[in-house]
Length: 341
Image 1 (spheres, rainbow, N blue to C red):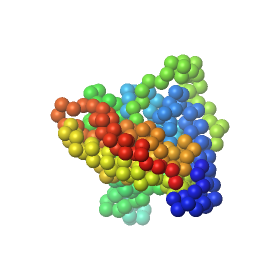
Image 2 (image 1 turned 180 degrees about the horizontal axis):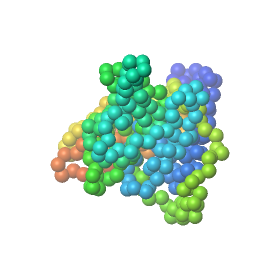
Image 3 (image 1 turned 60 degrees about the vertical axis):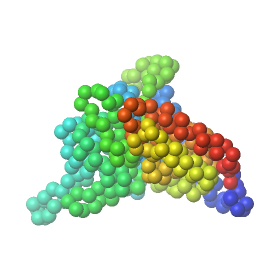
Image 4 (image 1 turned 90 degrees about the vertical axis):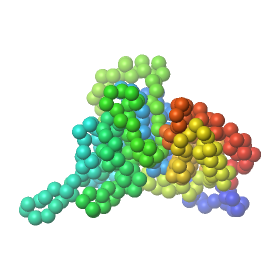
């Protein structure tokens, strides 16, 4: 890792130590996820980046691709000795008859005390799996919006804070299947990544079949879990110690401008998504052993960061292609820049 900052002075040793500790924490979680999920290395990396950057994830594919298993494995990778009352993992099965209070919780009258008591809903957890989120109405989908955007829920005009580690992993089946509702645009914009869960490779699928009995009722993992405080500390270390060149910020703004001016696009990349992209790029750089964001980080994350945020005009259906076209000019400018400290 580099030891010189933009002014030419050495970085503080604590900065390198903090990044090393962040990498160790990330390695603990990655090992747990890789043990549970075969043939999903790229997906595991993206979920890990989301966790380390405080973003939320939308997983999409047909049933049976391992979306639920991945979310559960992430929750079980975490331990919180300081807040034992907060569950590491909760699952919400979205159905057409689900109510917002089934997600956030509700106030219940206590006859002995003569007062209303708030009963926390399943959203009060470190990792919340919103399973098949597009099988319920937009009204219920939006019950997660405040939680994802503000880290809090409001019930009966009382605001309840969620933990700083709060992460939503939502799954959805592709549109066109019976009983699915498109997610509203504001909800989509709250997700850092949208990740398609494609089929795993032949070798991994054969290994799944050969070990399916152990996977039906898996024994508790002997691998260590990551402490909640270590994950929060990793986020801070990445934010402060991984250098982001001004050229990267210029690239993001220029890319957004090209996309917004494309006549095939009805709604382009939001400023919020550009802000969310920065910690994600820094987290990927750390996972690759660097203390600066590179063009490789951009190439890897542009699609999962932005494709799902584009609303296309009539006759357009290739958001990935539009984004690829928009990359050319900003990337040419970026290649002439120095991205290290």
